[in-house]
Length: 102
Ligand code: TYC
Image (tube, rainbow, N blue to C red; front, side, top):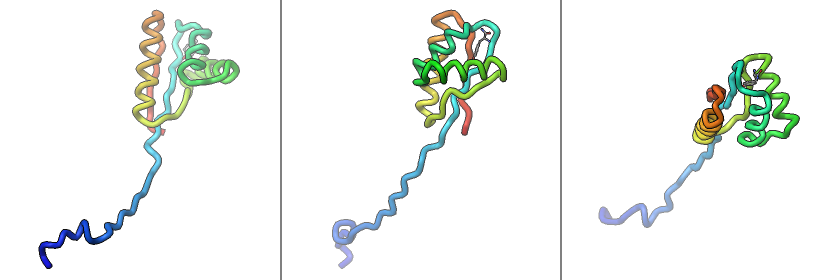
């Protein structure tokens, strides 16, 4: 009969495919002014690094010019960049933070 609602009388087949979200690296850039200790403490606080991990990452940035702090889905990466800039500006440092597709 043409009045039957087939959505209520027939089981609808759903192929549910869950994929990983696109990921972004959050990187810090070197500069000549931001104190090393400030960068280490920032890496511990915002990127959950140990003191040893944070020191290694900071020194890598100091020597290479750029370094990866972490890799996150887009919205989380955007929040990390904003938090780093807010924290750096509040404390009078020119530290730059960026995100890039990974
Ligand atoms: N180059 C800075 C100094 O000598 C330290 C520094 C490290 C700054 C990493 C920024 O992302 C940075 N005080």
